[in-house]
Image (cartoon, rainbow, N blue to C red; front, side, top):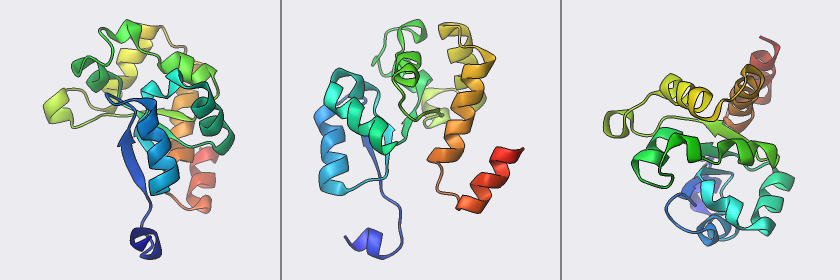
Length: 145
């Protein structure tokens, strides 16, 4: 498409409040490289398989997911399950002025609410490097720190 031809990277918001089918459409119709949100992907085993196989990042925003009632409480969030399924999930903020919570607040929320270990939090942080649109050299430099 035009955006890709212009050198732009493609991302779509999908699978947060909307169903997993929206994630499929983002991948297959729009040809995106990354899914913003995507927490409902867990509801579709074939989709999970595709996301794992292709290592398509899901940029998860736990505090806004609770604010929007995708999950009633942070303790109910599926972030750990997504991580355990082998999905390339990251922790992010989502319009902090509106939803509350910057990135560090989201990390604290999943640490406290889901009891995530330091190793799990490090894995999420490393996933952020892989999910970024940095050059391979820049990613390698960050990994070595």
